[in-house]
Amino acid sequence: MKLYTGMGPNPRVVVIAIAELGADVELEAVDLMTGENRQGDHLARNPSGQLPTLQLDDGSYLAEITAIVEYLDEKSSGSLIGSTAEERAETRMWVRRIDLNICENLGSGFRFAEGLALFKDRIHCIPQAADDFKAITQEKLVWLDGLMDGKEFICGDRFTLADILLFAFLEFGANIGQPLDAKCERLQAWYARVASRASVAT
Image 1 (tube, rainbow, N blue to C red):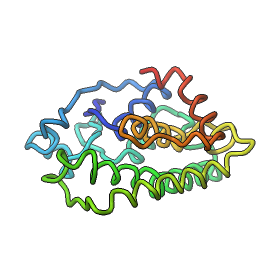
Image 2: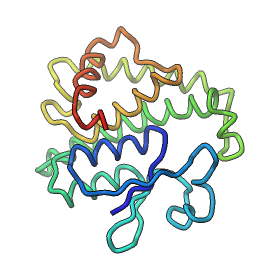
Image 3: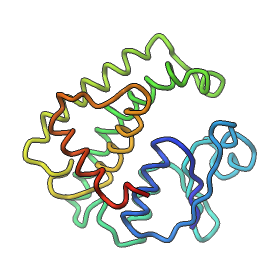
């Protein structure tokens, strides 16, 4: 298998997952800054022009980080999703909550403000909404922080895709002017635990 990857939190999610699972996946960088992901070769792999994209052993392609990680988890007999129906449902619940409430808003806040020069000719941008998206992100992080009491990871004592997703986006946020508020003490401690994992050092 080969992962077409590049800069940004979405590829980072899959790269961390690959390291956690010990999956045998070749990495090939696609240059987001020059728009290589929006050119013919990559569009043939992924018509959305996005990263990452996984080429399977049969030559077909799989996109979208949740689909990619779930596929790799199944192929590797991993535990990033869960070993029972209940665990898998819990993981997927939290992945969706984190994706919609935090990641999407954080990303939009960046694309419509600091990243506007890069994205204005690629997607429909709403610069006037950037501050609101950033504010919603922070509100949802405070909400999540309030639910982390006594929990080692997002799904209790299980390290899952939900943790990887949130970590990658908070790591990104710290570099683009959207850091995790110091008052979110539970999430700060959670972040440090995730950052200490060997997979994150990749």
